[in-house]
Length: 198
Image (cartoon, rainbow, N blue to C red):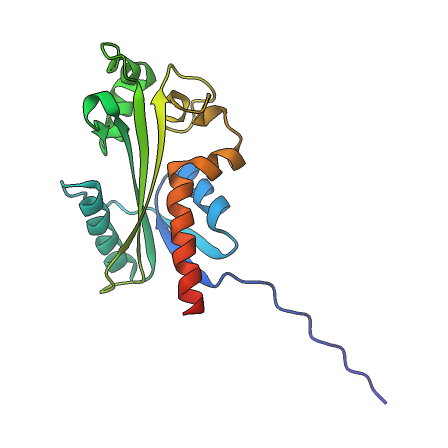
């Protein structure tokens, strides 16, 4: 009697898929490290107009625009670095401050202040596609601003210290477990997990 061979099991596939809107290779790497394989992450760089407003308003608007352009599920991110002594500045403008004055200049902004405390804030917006209202997921890590230490290839990581180490000095797994981005993505994962069981 002929025997039949069992078909090989199909490879495990992600149950969810998102287009992460970024042109930043470092951000893309961190997001993929945290979300995959449960959530498949592809990347698209779009030049999106950013409205003026609160971090939440900016993220919501950017997410709606991206969903309309992509015509599918999108994930957008906004990151802030908020100096306690400066009532939250540079905040959402950290990218432009860093480009203009660098790590040393950012430290100099706090030279006259004893308080070097800072909050790293990450807000992700997810939309299932055009017409779907975005959902926000936010993570905050409290730290302080220090002279740069560690590799300088990822934004302001060398000047943001958490419990004795700058982001730049941490290994990837540790940073992903405590960072503002990691905390926000953990909330996103929890939301997706509930959606799968609903």
